[in-house]
Length: 357
Image (tube, rainbow, N blue to C red):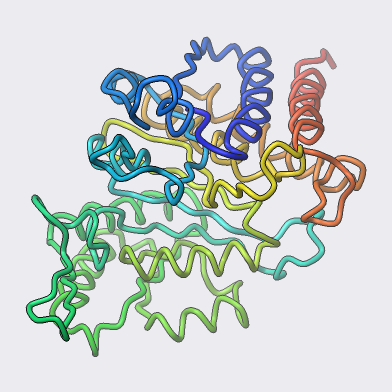
C-alpha cells in the first residue's frame, strides 16, 4: 500500500530491498500492490475501499506508506483515515518503535539503542478508545473534556510484548508513565507491568516518570533497552528517540497484533518533498525488515530472521557512504539510489556468506 506524497517513493525503495532479500534468502514472497489514500480516492471516491481493507486482512503482512490525512476530504465524502482504520480492524495493539545510534549518522546520540513498545489502542487518543463516538466532548461551550481509557487487558497484553522483546534483546525493561499524578489509569497500567516483570525474573525492571524518562533518554540513553509505555506518552517519546537517532527519516515502526502486522514508517508523508527523489527511505526499509522479523518469529522461519538481519547490516553499510546517504543525513544520494544501494548490499552480503570456504 504505497500511500501518499513520498509514500510511493520510499515504498518503492523498500520493495527493491525486500525483493533482494526474497531472492537471496528464498523467502517465497508473493507481493500485491493495492492503492490507498488519494490515489484510491481519485479512482474510487474513497481513500480506503472495502477491497483494500480485505486485502490487508487476508495478507500475512502489509507494507503501508505514509498517508497524508490532513489533505483528505471529510469522512462522509470518502476521506477515511487509512492507517487508523486498518489498525482498528486488525487490532494492531502494539506499536514497536526502535531507535539507535549508527556509525554513518554523525548527529546520533551515542549509546542509544532502545525499542519503545507503545500501547496502540487506548490512552488519551480520542479517535480510538471508544466503541462508538470519540472520547472528547464539550458539556458547555466553555468546557472541553477528554477521556483517558486504560484497560487491564490492554495493559497486560502490551506488557507481555515488551517482555518477549526484552528476552531477545538486553533483558531490561523500563515502564514509563506518571503514576503519582494519574493514579488510577497509570496505576492499573503499572500493576500489569509489574506483574509481567514478576513472571520474568530474568528481566531487570524499573518504573520511571515520563518527564524523567524524556531527560534520561537524552542524557543517559545507555541505561535503557525496552521501554514499555502508554499510547500518547509513547507517541511523544518515540519522536524524541527518532530525533536522537539522527532524524525522523530513520524512524522505523511496526504495528502488530496477535494475527497481523503492518510495516509503517514512523513519520509523515512530507508533501513538500514529494516527487523530488530526496526522501529518506531508511525508516520504511527498516520497518519492512521488522515485518520480516515478526513473520519469522510467528511462523518459525529462520530464513526470515536472517533476511531481517541482512537488511539491517546493509542499511548500516549504506549509511556509511556519503554518496548514497540522503541529504537529510548529510549525504549526496537520493531515495531510489539509497534503496538500490541497500538492495545490492543485501545480495552481496548473502553471496559472501554462501560462498564455499
